[in-house]
Image (cartoon, rainbow, N blue to C red; front, side, top):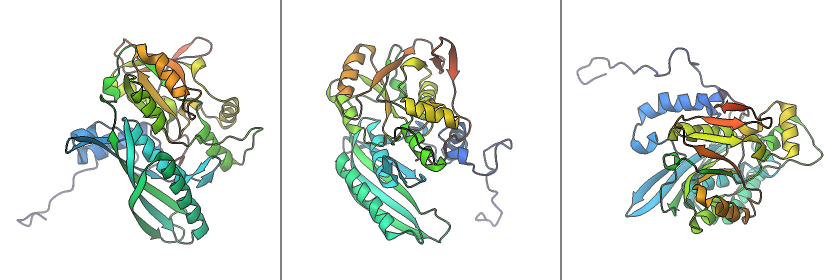
Length: 353
């Protein structure tokens, strides 16, 4: 009611009638449905310049210091998987989001949403895993919260982490900084995290075990910055994989990105798993991989510094930014054909992180 007693109508939901009137798994995919949800519901409600950038973190100026802030939630199932668990993922994922703007994480918060009946030993394993991951990334967990929901309503455990860090990059790292001719470099082989999760879910076994690539990426990023590499943009390759990350960057920068499929590193066992399950490895989630756009003249030095990091020995050049302002990503296949790489419209791998 208004002050004069008249009814105040609620604003209509801004999603058009053609959209689903309910939340779908695809709204959490990092693809087209996620983008529409954010752009049509979230941005209009909280519009401000920092949010409008649609980066995974915001950079604030506090008493002259540039501070990065980010938050993320983790709902992966199963909570323990080959190569990691939900606790390690929650720490590394937030540390990596900060690293992608050239910031070193300093402090984390954690919130646990626990389901009644979760074994205490399970929670202890996750807490211990988080402690090890935080120590490995040189970050402190300084505050948090715990909530418990009724049995049958929480699927064991969900975790939210938020992080703050100091920006070390001397210049902005964002899609707006990309330039024609930039080298496009990936830090290692793709698809292991997603396939490790799916192998457990589907009860598949392979000759060689597929383990998640879950790892902190901050040291590899700092190696680039410390080496004076002209880094223009960074993006970790989580939900939606390499393809979705490149499409987001191309659309935001209005630049054209061209990649060579033959240069994109995918392990044979991961490729085989993708073929069995019907997935394209370009869209499969990773939790320890990133793509870097660096000045063309710095490409070889960037590769050298990345390959010295134990988490990035297979870093490789996969493409270039073309001098064509189309906002498109194109891929040259192994047989020489060229196609446009598009954003996923739905959910390929639900609850992957």
